Length: 300
Length: 235
Image (tube, rainbow over all chains, first blue to last red; front, side):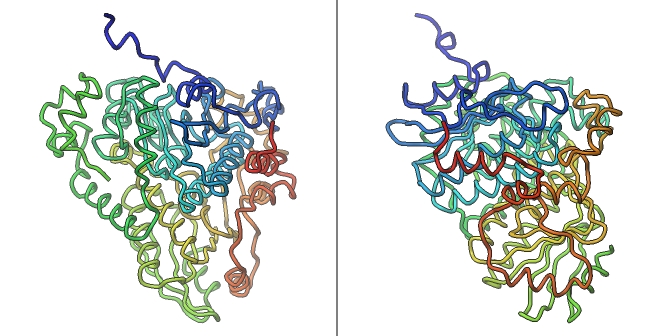
């Protein structure tokens, strides 16, 4: 028998459309404004930059375990999944449709560096429109689940969008933040953060750290089947957008600052949480970490 | 414009707003009654502590003063950029703030933002840009990234970006661009108090920024694309 690892299909290596196809029930996905519709960026041409016929965003509907869900997937191969006018409007439209039609949920397959700087101002406003539409879908009772495991991670304004979701699943390779490592190094200098130090980058932004702190609700292997299983579970446990729930979250976030605010490095934070073998965190498989330290992570 | 000058102009009948570090919070008096005032000043960099404090102010208004209008004062150069903020999960703190503002809207709190200084990136997304209406006064400088930094990141020559940005609302920083794109509703000139009172009196509606951006010629496709996907007529 082959080891299980060889049977995995990597989420990270898959394109946005392959991720969607593998996530949903076979053959159930219907794309809206597909590449054949040729809706492209109205701004990149002025910079002599190539356009994509989907502007790097795949949106549509399909079935997840026989239940109808709406799905958006960002294509990292086009401009790092960054949000321009059209890309953002596709996500906003999808979330507005969800608020009206109330499907079983919305899945956001996030893979983005944030605002597309070549459309800077329009991209920032577009991210703001996504945030409002996302929160309105949640207010309408539609759970929104984010999945992060692509090569670009989830940064800038899209990092805030991710944090607005009901729940997040991340792979170890997935990264979540606002100011990404390259931006931090460029703006604040290499002494603030050495973006070439992969271990440092992963323990600051990576899935394991985000899961231990409670920002990610599921830590999964880099495997499309693992993401599908996590999505199914997370759709069933929405985070209510109510005063009492937000007050509880507020206390949890205040507690995090109190307990971990002095940590100079992720390892200090893990030690404070009571993680027993700090070296093991980086080495072990996600499911091993979940088994070993699940009791010590902060759940939100 | 200083926060005090702005508050005097917005609330000539009186205001009680205190500054706690970068965060402003308190109340202002309008003809229609007391409103809550929440925001930042001094081109604030919004880090984990400020985001948490702002969210706490929003939740306190929702808890203690159901339905009270909230005036958001915007002066922020963006999220605080530090390894510590990222380590602690700044995204979660900013997302929590956005969710608190979303809850306030859902509970019927009118939200009017007034940009009186900088308005950028992770500082403006979870609070100022979440408002029902977003207006600018003298000194408003909305932007995403300085052109020099944009040139480095996009690897486009600075001279080229400068030339292109002169005619481009998506590239040029500043109020004019954000008005054209629909990201800011209007630029207020004095007297400010009646303009604020009129804005507070208008009923909240859906997010029409993309439609406004189309009408003003800044964003030709956003409204149509969002509408086609939302309505399912695409394909």
